[in-house]
Length: 166
Image 1 (cartoon, one colour):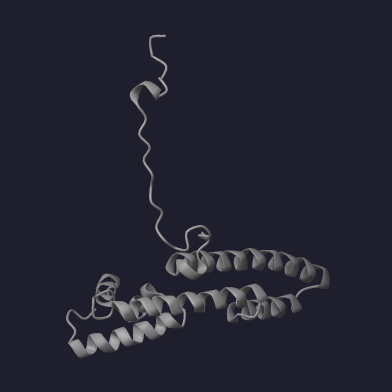
Image 2 (tube, rainbow, N blue to C red; image 1 turned 90 degrees about the vertical axis):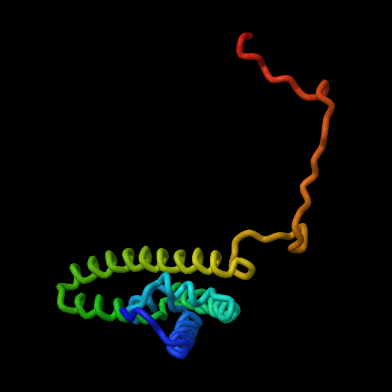
């Protein structure tokens, strides 16, 4: 892991990171693939000079992950297609009854795996870009903050709590 980076190297790395994220990639994965510190990358990306680009990259990332979730649900993502193809190759080597049983078990496992993959993407997009993908919908305030009202009651009107001694 390189200890210091010139300003030009930092900008180039952040450009690559933001492009990577906009395609659905994760900061941790980028750091691992490029032998960089996650902490350093995050500090650079959230620096005032890059914060707006980082925020846009996170929004683009959320959209890319939402699209990935749809591809997974539709069974057209690369992992699903490759795994299904490999399972069918293995099934072709088996007796017909064993092949049917194997494919039935594989299909059940595939459904569970894909549910986990889509749920993880839904959760992550809801956290990263709550305004678009979050579960909570504000239909009463138009996004404005609610003002808390304080009601003061005279002491004699407050309900009395039961006493411990009876």
